[in-house]
Amino acid sequence: MRTNCESLNGNRSNLEKHILRTLAENQDFNAYMTYINNPKEHFKNFIRDEVSHYITERFEDSVRPKMKNNIKLLQQQIMSAAHESSKHVKEINGNTESWLLHFTQQLSGVLVFSVKDLTGVNHDDVEVRFLEDVIKKELPSIMFDIISKFSTETFPVKLEHKYRPDEILIDHLCQCCWVQCPFCAAICTNTIENHDEDHSVPFHRNNGLNGWFYRGTTNLAINICTSAVASNGSFYPNSSDDTVPWKEYRKGGPKYASWSITPDLSDLPYWKKPFTRYQTYQKN
Ligand SMILES: [Zn+2]
Ligand SMILES: [Zn+2]
Image (cartoon, rainbow, N blue to C red; front, side):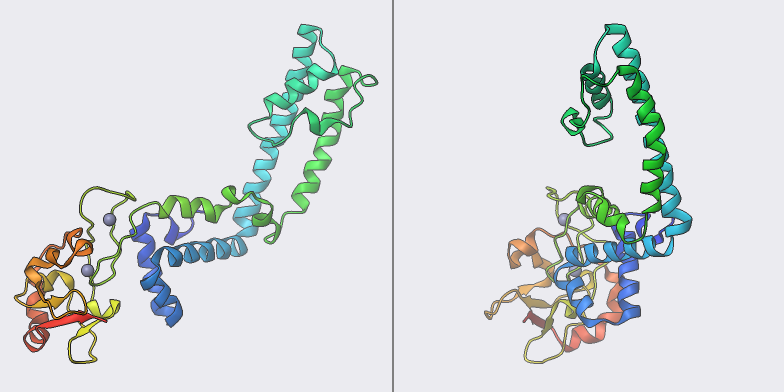
């Protein structure tokens, strides 16, 4: 699925590009707000949607053949476990019980069952040599039955939660830092969830996205963090009248101090006008 699905075949940053594109295409304001206010939730929803589309669209040519293949492999494993058990019982001169025990032990890694599940087998009446024959005879039709019931609806439902493709992908793509820049809400790109070094992101955004506005106005801030921290202006880190110079943004408090925002002067010419007009702004 990852090979065939562009949004899921890279890291979280690659996924985010697809998320931003989809947000722009759909123009769904609520989804956009979830992305800003609760990015992890939005990423999870996006992954679930992508997986669900994939299963629906590629069921016949990609999903079903894979499932069929897995069932065939399982069938082979069961057959060979039955054969091995017969060999083992012969060697130790064992009985039905030792056959069943050996059989279930060999399959413990691929099937969830134990000797208790085979209580229907009457140990006294069954001869060991018949057990392998029964498996050989019955298994193909059981497997055929399972394959014929495959569908887009049953596929994810039948899987245990931790084996669902969307959950595996969420685990894979979402175990990283989710701390957002206190100014622009961009998500830290560190791949470790609780890292020691400062949070950072290669691209910051307009601060207005996160609700910052110019004090005394209703205008959302259009400054970008990297150019702001290179400027001579200042900001209000809280509702009081205390300002913090942008160049010393870390003094704004712990959530500012834990971020490394590199001043990028190349943005300055573009942002020069708004800076001269509005020197200070605050978070609502
Ligand atoms: Zn930022
Ligand atoms: Zn981080």
